[in-house]
Length: 219
Image (cartoon, rainbow, N blue to C red):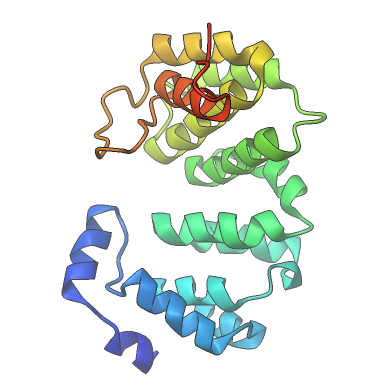
């Protein structure tokens, strides 16, 4: 904890706070520290229990994802207060866990929108990598009915799932694009030069164009 405190950078804190996070450690420095520590599950658990966001991020980098029980991962998600801790927990730990599918189903239906966002993030991962058994038309039905008025983090995750369906599944692409155009979620999201907009119709068409060598997404 003393070493983490020594890494405090006011400039990094200002950047992180603009995104809803509450720590001042440069993420590159955090990753360098994790590389030196290597995998240390006991230390990771102790760091998580401090409640400090920088410590929790470090914990997620040095833990063993498969060592956590299902109920422990569920509790950790509900304890993850900030966007970066939430994102790293889902992407670096839960996705590698044998409990990922069970948690995906449970979290997607959770009344807490932050928990539900994690479920939708896992669903987007399955759409992209293991879509077998998923009801893609049913997912599009839910997105069409609920995404427009969803809280921000849940809306973002549902939009990601919408884009993944459109990018990876040609038979559902026209409907995914049409849903995005009608709902206009993230249509005006500020995008840096050279980056792809998260607005689903633009995102889908650009990723399909790149993948197919400029042939375009089609409608």
